[in-house]
Length: 170
Image (cartoon, rainbow, N blue to C red; front, top):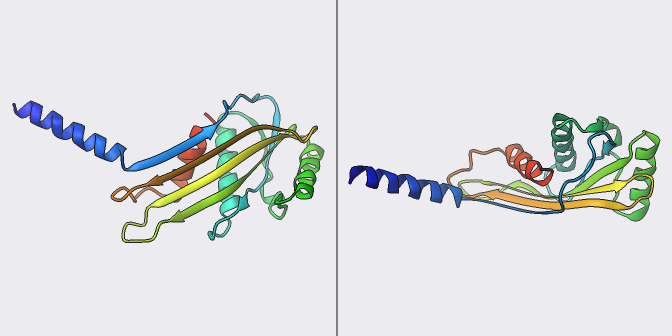
């Protein structure tokens, strides 16, 4: 009887903890070649967090490099290039092609903050877009959001965004 009670307590604890975080990912299958050359540009920052676009792009750059994708490592060089409009995107595509990248990776950071309140849980939301630098055509896109609910707020913002990005480019 005691073993059943302990097992039920463990099951309850696992179900409570797993329901405390929310992650939503909408994406196509990440089916791009590791031998192709990619340029990761800073993401647009639509948050109040300074440098969130640079931070997220840098984490994505590191994830791709750790998975043996051929990435041009020059995010900082491109940090002043915004692509909020069509001419900005065309400029970035030309720059990526000139640098030898076959694909341009850009995105948006929509949320990158700790929620207000006593617990201060992290919440993130990001879009990723991959364009062919030769044709300017969108070839892949994805969006991911996550939050950690009360009681688990010891997770950092960057750990949460890295989890989201890992699932997106899985």
